[in-house]
Length: 455
Image (spheres, rainbow, N blue to C red):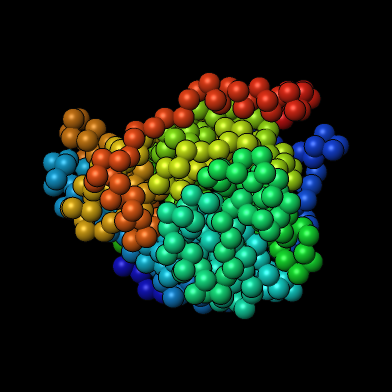
C-alpha cells in the first residue's frame, strides 16, 4: 500500500510526551545521577538521541537507503483468522518478518551500525537471546563494513544453530554465553558450570568486551530510548497504511521482552492520543511470557541491566539482574527488565499488560498459521494470542473494533519449538512470585540507599 518513498524520514521520540519525566540513571559509586559507563560504549550521536527531548529526529539518508531493502513492510488484514474466530472485529497485522534477518530488529541495528561507522568504530559487540538481535546487528555491521561479536545465550545457541549460521554468513563471530572470552563469563561458568545462560549474563560479556577494547563499541537491541526511537518507523508506516484504508485502530497489541517492537508500533499512535489527533481512544495491550513476567510481576525500582552489575542503575520493572530464566522457546522475551519508558506508561495505566504461558501462545500461533499461512516466531505469538483474545471479546459484545498487532518476526528458525509443542513437550510454566520477592530483597540488601532516592 506504500512505496519506498513513503518510508518515514524522521523517527518519533516519546520523552517529551511521557506522563512524567524519565527517572535519571544512577551511578552506584556516587549514588547520584550520572551516565556511568554509557558514554564509554556508545557513539556521541546515539548518546544524543538517548537523552534528546526533540520530538522528531531525522533519519539519515544512508540508513533509509538500507531500509529500502525491505521497507515499507506490509500491513495485512487477517480475514481468514476473523472467519475462524467468527468475530465482528477487523484484525490487521504489521509484518516485520520480511526484513533480511526476518524480524523488526534491523530497524535499529542498521541505524546503530551507521552512527558507529561515522564515528570511527571498527567493531561492535552485543548479546542476543533467540538470535534475532544478533542476526540484525550482524546484518547492520555488514552493511557498513564493521566487524561484529555476538554473545548468544547458551540455551538459544544450542536450540537455534541456524541463527548462528546466519550471523556467521554476515561475518560475525558468535560465542555461547557465558563464554570463556570475558572475565564475567568465566566467573559465572565457574560458579555455575551447567547454567543455560541469560540475557543479563550475555550483556555483561558484551559490555565488558566493548569496555576493554578501544576499537569496539556496544550495540543494544531493546530497552534503551534510542532503540525504541528507531523502531518507530513501524508505527509511522502503519499510520499511513491505515490512512489509505480510511480506518484507525481501536486496539494495538504487541509482545514485550525489553519493549522495542511494541513501542515501535505504539509510540506514534500514543502521540496521536496525547496530541489530540487520534480519532479514537485507542487501547494499548502489551503481552509477555509467564516464564519471564518482567512487567506483570516485576517490581518497579532501580536495577542493573546486566548480571555482573557493570551497567549503571535504571528505574524499570525488573525481576532482578541475576534472574536466570527457564529455557523457554521465546528466547527474545527472557530479559529481566523492561524499557524505562514502557515502565512509566504502565505505571500511568496508559498500557494494559498481560502474561501468557507458552502452551496457550503456541496454540494461538498454530491457529494463525493454519488460517493466515505465516508461521510466527514464538515471541510475537504472544501478540497473536492477545489479538485473538481481543477479537473474542468483540464476538461476545458484538462490537466491530479494529485490532492491529505486530508480527515482529517469522518462525522459520523455530521448528524445534513447534515440534516440542506438537509433541506435547512444552510445560505451561509460570515464574514463581516468591523468586521475584527474593530477588528484590537481595537488591535492597545490596543497595540499601535505593529506597531513599527521590525518583
